[in-house]
Image (tube, rainbow, N blue to C red; front, side):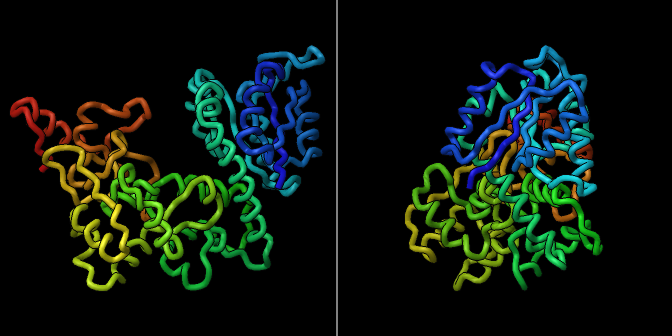
Length: 384
């Protein structure tokens, strides 16, 4: 399927062409970019985009810094244009499509990062001088997945009865293990715009650990070392039928349903205990016996004194972690089905990942400060 991508950027073609050509090549030319510089007139620009009927829209943050081929400079920015387009999508005056932001890191820091309302407008944000250059294959995959996800959501939305769980790839009784709060925002008979469903799935389910977990967290809960276990892919295939997320956007953001993973373990004959009660070595020993996958290896702990009853990962070191050895991080508006994120004590003390903007949960401050004092006094870690 050829995906039409409308790309609006005030930079001249010779400057940005290498970027979109890199993505087109990574997508085996299944993505086709239609590059244009912004028109001066805002209304005319909106009309041009509407007429083009793109599958996905890519906007630069600043559209008003360089003149176009007619010597004119737009008097609006990407945020204003995205807001107008989203409004028209909500009103049904144009089809809902993904809107992606491309910009330089310095410009994102100046305005976008400081504007919380802008974060609702874009499905994803990419940095021109970072991942677009360093990870073109992943960016191309994500752009394609965004389009496919929107199309799946639109198909479900256009049915007589909208069933949100089917947008998540769940059928029949599979929806029973969903926390009731997950679908509550869409419990009315009203049909919401496609981009509202999309934003919710991406931001509240895929991006935040809870009902869905990442591959790294899945491996941690099974006690498996991702890097050294050559049978890991085979293990994932054994779990895929019952535990893999197959809903909107799954192609680029592989996730696993947390509850069915535990259910899968509970249903194994002669299991030695629950996942939470076992160490990584005990989990992997049983996995190897029940699956005959002998090249599954247990994950090592972050350091001496750390528990091996892993349940999450350290956001700093990206290694398996038991929550008792972690410092809880704060994020706003946490839902009941979402899980807190953690930094290992060592990562917190070393301020690893501080540049990503993590903040310690307020109720953890006293414990964290006490740990620092103990280390100064005793020269060693004591997480209890």
